[in-house]
Length: 196
Image 1: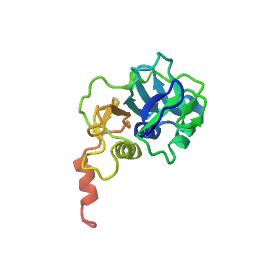
Image 2: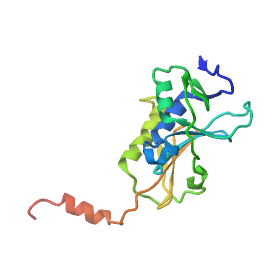
Image 3: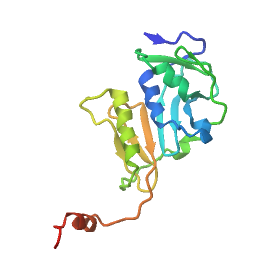
C-alpha cells in the first residue's frame, strides 16, 4: 500500500525520506535546512552543513515543478507508525499530514558533492560516522549481511559515502581539520609499561 492519493503527489520510498532526516539540520537559525529538499531534477536532499544525504526519486511522470523544502516535524509525524514502502509528498503534505513547505532557499547542494575522490585518509566527527551507519540501517534494515555504509576518503575535501547495494543514494561527510600526529609515536606512549 502507498499513500499517494493527494493531487500532484510524488511517491517516494519511506525509508529514503526517513534516512534523509538524519542529516537535516535542527538549528533554528538555519531554518531553510530544517527539512528535506525536493529537488526538481529528482532528488531528496538534506544537510546540516557537516553531512549531506541525497537520494534519487522518480519524477518522470510529474509535471515540472520548482523545488520545495518539506518541514522536518511534518516528516517525523507522517513517518510515525507508517508501514508502507512508498509515501506521497507535495508542498502541502507528507503522507496524511498537511504542511507548508519551508519558506526559504535551499543552498546549491551540488557544490559540496565531490567529483573525484583522492583516497587520502581523513578524520571525521565520530557521531557523524555513526550517523552514516544509521542511514545504512534505515535503508537496509538492521542485521543485514552488508556493510551499512562505506566512507570514500578524500583528504581535506568532502568524503563520499555509499550505502551497500543502494545505488540510488549517497552522502557527503565533511572532514575535521586535524594536525598530523605520527601514529607510531602516539601508540608507543600509550602502550608503554608504567614506570619504565
